[in-house]
Picture (cartoon, rainbow, N blue to C red):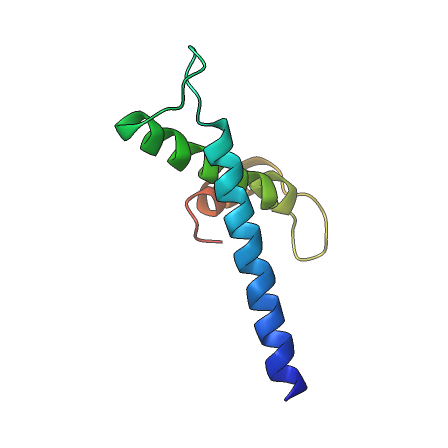
Amino acid sequence: MSKLMLVLFAGLMAAGAAMAQTSDCEAKAVGKNGKPLSGAAKTSFLKKCEADAKGAAAPSCESQAVSKDGKPLSGAAKTSFIKKCEAGGK
């Protein structure tokens, strides 16, 4: 029973964080003239804002580019790893 409560609590915390991120982006969706964005401009802004926020939370591919023995990758191995990581295939 306690495991179920822990899972539910973790789920609620994750949902709360996602909601806060969306409302934060909503608050920033303002045009140069100070008026709130609407329509396609708002949709585009929110999509970019949320993607940027997720990217900031995730560790960078550059920092993950290490070999099995813990040494930083270099050269072609590093380039290949970063390309694969950024494509989402880590």
